[in-house]
Image (tube, rainbow, N blue to C red; front, side, top):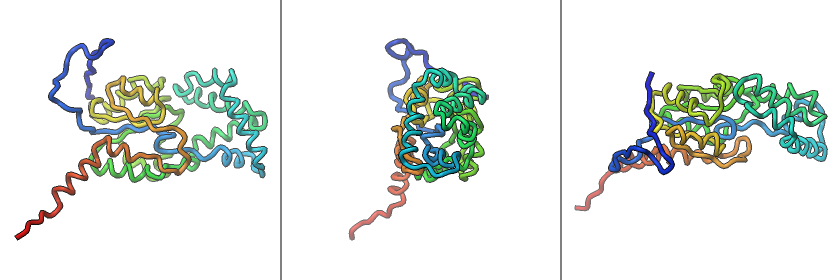
Length: 260
């Protein structure tokens, strides 16, 4: 197993200076979050209509969605979120408690949670597949690091995207959550790539951006992208140097014209 040494930092920076003539290490691996980064689950309105199995008019739907929004600040719901992703049991409890905070949805809390785990309810963003393919074609190792309560490989496989990944680090399997360095370090070791050569991509400033505390680079996407929308993952290609490599290849392969 490969081990990597992190620099020791004081309040103002590293205690020991590193050579200043060296630029940033090239990105050799990219770690991705799951929900909100590569995939988004179907809309709550569609999910609610599915479990209720009846017509739900817009006014009623607005009331149900308002109830879910209000539930986010309900003390019982807030308490249930603590340590939500450290185990499968805690994850289920957190979500079903939230769903059940709306009286009409309480009998369907388990069905709504089953949707959450079902691969067919998750939609890749429009640029997910092309981004992963470009990174893989460049020989960049890919991994998933997700705060989640179940194994995500079936979801990726359902959409034909599991082939791109060499490691899967699920929080529930390690009894901890991001930004615990344990999760990022585990992924780096399994890929055999140093943290300084690894980019973490996610949508949560504290959790995914916290990878910087483990020695990785981090890129945080803005929240709120709709299912199936273009996520803006082309920025990851630039950060990983893929576009620059392509430009160099084009330059090398371009014919040189001379005038007689």
